[in-house]
Image 1: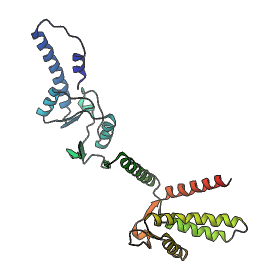
Image 2 (image 1 turned 120 degrees about the vertical axis):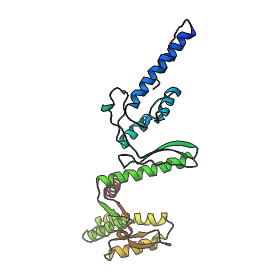
Image 3 (image 1 turned 45 degrees about the vertical axis):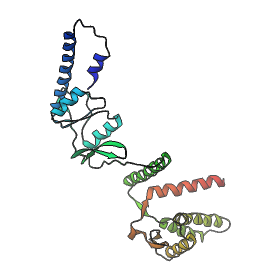
Image 4 (image 1 turned 30 degrees about the vertical axis):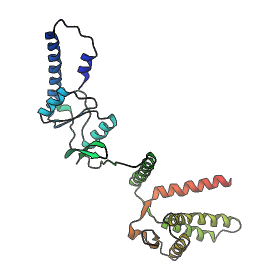
Length: 275
């Protein structure tokens, strides 16, 4: 919207009278009005521009009942076009060839000291914005990393929908299987197999310790439950004092792909250290 104005104000123009200057300004306004008319011909009620929108075209948009939004960053424009089902355009000569985006509501919201434009009810339906706020940059960075990790796990789960039970259940079931396999191993190799099973049991221990519970008691109870055939059992860390519960009933699940990658990576790291 400001291209023509930059050309006029960035050039040296010599006129002989104020009348000539008025003619130049009038010609500039007419060019801007023509561009606004082309944009209006698209039948829109909101115009989002990456650059500055000057007062004159902004007034023309307002008179036509069109909301104008300026200084939108390029990444934001791309995401907005994606979720609203529209496309980014730089020419307005052929309205019939431009795909318009749609949403149910556009509103200005204030979060803290920041003023934001919120688009609700977008055509794609799956988009959302997560706003992180914190007292320090360190807290924000930590929150951002946590959110990123959670979304990364979620995206991998969508690609590979298989899941395992959480709460230390999967690790304890694997440890039980390794212990059973260890019965058929003789000699010093048995020590390595037993150590692998012990390492698997460390994750429930860490979960209990991080929750502030008695890990020795909880892990012993969990081990007894799983080894006795209750293979859906895991740590219930929401119960006061901790407890053992059916993870399937509680809906505590983890990504199978992530769990497999963690166990495989840990095993490979241990092998490297041993070698």
